[in-house]
Length: 412
Ligand code: PMP
Image (cartoon, rainbow, N blue to C red; front, side, top):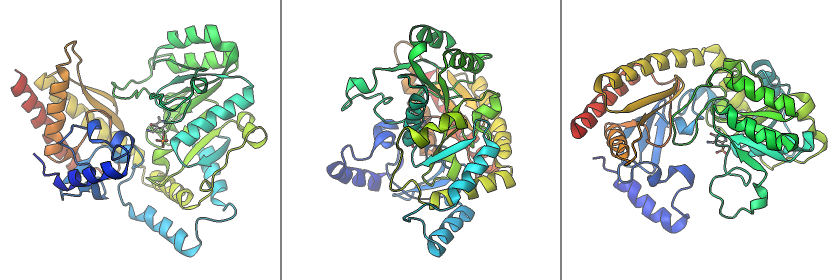
C-alpha cells in the first residue's frame, strides 16, 4: 500500500479550511479512499509526483487539458516571455484574440466567429444564452456534462427550480428520446446542447451510432433550434477540428476548452456568424480576466505544436495500439472488464451486476494500478498525451495485465 501520510495530513488540515477539503471531483471519495494521493507536488511530461514522493504515470491529464505533457517547456516559455516582456493583464484587449479566432476559423468546421472565456462552464452557459437570444426561445435540450452552472448541474442545492425547469435531458445515442422531447417542446426550443462523443459521467463511453448525430442535426434544423456541440473534452483531442470534424456533422455553435491551451485557462464559444452576432447586440458577456493574454499565447503555441508535430496523429496511433493490447488482455483474463472509448480517451469499467459486486472487482483493479504507480481512476475515463512514450504505455500494459490477474485470482 502507498504511503500517503503527507497527503492525508494536508487533507485533514484542508477540511478545517476549505468546505469538503478539496473542490469537486478531486475528493478522496471520487477515487478509492485511503488508496489514492490527495495532493500533488509536481509533474513533468506524463508523470506526477505526490506530496509523499510517490511517482505516477498519469492517465488523467489534469482531467483533460494536458494534451502535450505537464510542464511543456515551449509553451511555458512562450507564456513567461509574454508576461515578462509585454504583460498579460491590461486595461484593454491585446491582438491575440484575433489571431486565435482566425486559427479556429481555419480548423473547426463550425467556426466563423468566436468569443473567449476562461472555464468550460463559462462557455457552455454563454452558448445557451447566445442561442436563447438568437432564437428568442426558452427551452434547452441537453446531453452530457456541461459544468457547474445553475441550468445544468446535477446537484440542485442552492438553485431555484426556475433556473433549470426549461432544460430537458436526453441520453447519448437515444435519438428517440430527443424526438419525443422535441415533439412536445420543439417549437419553444432555443438550443440542443450535447457532447458529440458519448462520455457520460461514470459510464461507459459511446461512439456515435450510425445516423445519431445526423438525426440530431435534422431535428435542430426542423425546429429552428441552435445545435451546440460541447467539445470541451473532444476539442483538440479527437481531431484538430474536434469530434465534429472526425464525424462529419457540423453544429451551429461549439464550445471548446481544456486541451486548447495545455492547461492554461481559456475556453471558447465559436460558431456561425449569424448566431454568434447575438453576443454583440443582445446580451452582455464580460469578465475582468477574459482578455488576459497569457492563456491566448499558450493556446496559440499549443495549436502550433499540435500541427507542427502531428501530435494527434501520434496519440491516435499509440492509443489504438494500447487499446488493442488492453482488449487482448481482457479477452485473455475474462474478469468482466470492459474497454470503451477511442484512442485519445478511453475507459476501463466492469460489467455491472444487480448485486453491485462488480464494484469490488473494479476497486481492486484500480487499487492495484495506483499501488503500482499508474494513475487511472474508477470514476473517470483516461486520456493519453503526447508525452506518453511507447515505453510508458508498455509499462502501463504490464501493470494492467498484473491487475487483471489479481482480480481473476481473487474472484475465481
Ligand atoms: N463540458 C464538458 C464536456 C466537460 O467535460 C466540462 C468539465 N469537465 C465542462 C463542460 C465544464 O468545464 P469547467 O469544469 O472548466 O467549468
